[in-house]
Length: 273
Image 1 (cartoon, helix red, strand yellow):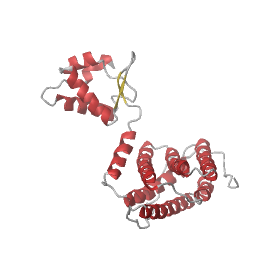
Image 2 (tube, rainbow, N blue to C red):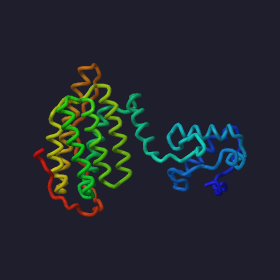
Image 3 (tube, rainbow, N blue to C red):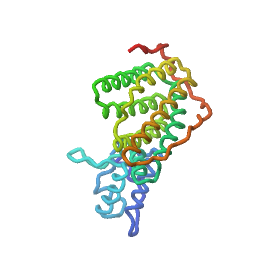
Image 4 (tube, rainbow, N blue to C red):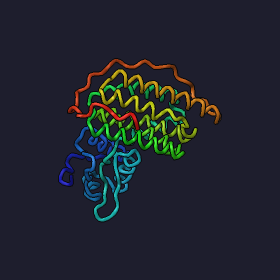
């Protein structure tokens, strides 16, 4: 990256750090800067841009704050493009929920709608590895429930949706789902864990349809599970004095076409565990 200083545009003016940050952000977004790539050394970088090192540091700090840049210390340190910039979206969405910018009802509704798309895509594209990861999650949830570890069980439940999104092989859906599950986790931390014992049974019904690539049955079970969860959360929140507005039942979006992944050799799941 050091030899490509010419890619960066020199700046002038009192708000030079904003122009520098905008230039770097644009290069990250359009792919000229890749995740994990190191930016030029500070001294050379500042000289090329025609600014003082403090101005450059201010620009880099602003990018670090929003998660696009990682500052590393030590002999091999410096400024690097964040390897996981998608977490920024999730954090900003969670902040909106905390500040009241979005309602819990809207989060549940979005989870149902986006969840339906995720299920449809994952049903077509999932692999054997995806099935195994999802089933391990269910087994862990069951174990945590049996041990009475309800808080851990709740967050492990939430993780199931991220694993399902990963099975779509679509990074955009993965990011959207992570944003929604992070908000769900925030809400769960505030109202307490879901004490219900129905989750594992619902998950096994879902997996039976999912493994068989029965899209409509899988979507129906997932929507029913999320609506049940919403009812539980409304009850828990009301008991704690919070009152998230209940959402009405949401219709599934039209089926989406998804490019199949290599077929899994597995045709059924063990529902007896």
